[in-house]
Amino acid sequence: MALRIGGGRLGLAMGLVLFSAEAALAQARLDAAPAATVFGQAQALCDADGGRAWGVSLCGPILIADPATRDFIANADGVDAPLEREGALFTGRLPDAVPIANTAVRWNGRVWTMLMAPLPEDETARSILLMHEAWHRIQDQIGLKAIHADQPQLETEAGRLSLRLELRALSAALAAVEPAERRRAVEDALAFRAWRHARFPEAQAAEDAMERNEGVAEYTGRLLSRDDQMTSRLAAHLARGDRVRAYARSFAYYTGPAYGVLLDEAAPGWKTDWDRREGLGRMLGRALELQVAADDEAFAERGARYEAAQIEAEESARAREQAARVTALRAGLVDGPVLVAPVSGASFSFDPNQVTPLPPEGSVYGVIRAATDWGVLEVEKGGALLSSDWSRLSVALAEASATQDGMTGDGWTLTLKPEWMATPGPREGDWTIRRRP
Image (cartoon, rainbow, N blue to C red; front, side):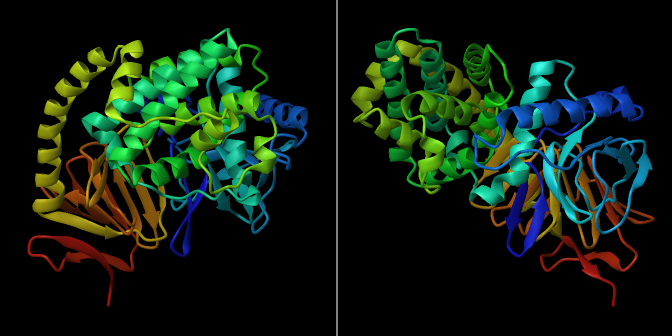
């Protein structure tokens, strides 16, 4: 998933799942035979589509990377520099500046679909992943460039309540047998969405942007997975989404495929006719000629069908816990002394399930890695504050100390290239990174 921020190009998945230590250890080395099987599976899936879904083929260069060693196996040679050949495949080691994640990345003269080892053992899950990431490789070609958008509304009680109701209604729509039942559930979902957007005026554009990126990618992954149980599996996927603790970077993985599949039924030619500026939910409402009310009375009436009272109680308890957590994050990452790393144009990888909006400063990422001209800042716990414009990444200086090639702190490590140095920042107690004189 390639994203442009400012003048730089980021090889990153907006909703990518970072590797765990267990996963890295489970894949001690990359083997050619399993990799060839994966490449063959991806080729078969995109050949079966034949470019019909989006007007272009999803087939292309793929590499599988081991996050523990940065070694990779690819199905194509490099362009700028040749790779080591191993039979019909190619191998090498990725430089530090290239993020390792399930993503699309521009490197060595190509735009690659990158997959992170180990891949899912379940064939259906692997098929969804393959086509999801393959779509990110071609999304620029079809006019759907990724756009960064914070989602602070999804950290509020009202925002989370309405989203969870929306997910339940979408799951009911997918599971419905009768058209009238499906139509009513879709109308419910759109009403919950409209209620949220009426209370958070900037939410509609932000959510639409995320759904045009990760939501459409996940829809494509499921559509092209050749799964004869796709609709029922998607309904179950939405039910799991109802239990997610952080929606700011993950919600579109649930809403996007649901709206896409429902659009396939309501307006089969929607992908061809789509004005890329329009949101999936609005397109579905127009296709079904629905007039959706966004008032409190309609919200309460519809919410009763999906146990809104239970959700309200759960979200009230969560809000109390989250308020204390946000206070602690603000104390450490805004008010306290921090290392402020300039990251405009950097390559990022992060865990979308550990993102806490902290408006107006930005969002706190529980796990994140940034690589740019000066080196690498890797945060494995505790979190880092990424500014709203994605130009600064801050970590708390508590318990920080100098190392031979940078600094280390509680849960983070800064590795600097020789021509760069850590130096006191403009605010007393802060540090930043500058080129050596």
